[in-house]
Length: 186
Image 1 (cartoon, rainbow, N blue to C red):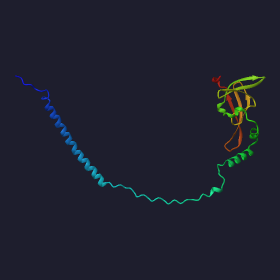
Image 2: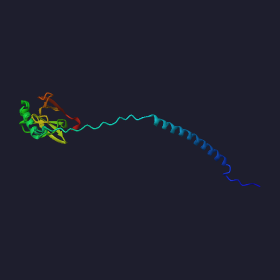
Image 3: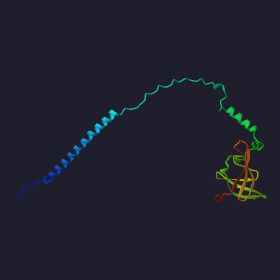
Image 4: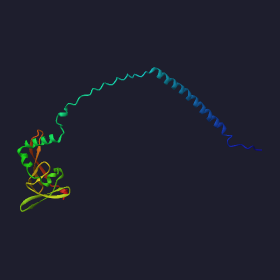
């Protein structure tokens, strides 16, 4: 006769062994936790914070504003006066440029102007300039750029200009500039 055995009957010793190992591990961790708690308590007893007391705030003493009667350095009146004085002191080179009528290409900075071609009309050289995807035809004597640039000569490959700019000392001087033909711009 055979007795019926259950499938879990053979596994009981394995479960018991596993439970015994887990209990031993937990018992070992409990000892470390006690040591850690003792160490933290000891550190709290020994270490004293070194915080110095706060100083009381200084008393605010208001200062009277005495410059109310003076001229505002940012007023439009003072700025206009400075511009008029600068215009009177302008050099002879700049004086002629300030008294003439502005041309359309003087609105644009020179670095936004590109020479894209040249042609000759009635024996006089002309150049084609591209600004903001618009073409302009210019001749010798025309003005280009925001620094009073005047065209002195036009060749097939370049435009020679002179600009009037201020140097480091504030003096107005002439500066030569060349615009070269842009090969890929045609």
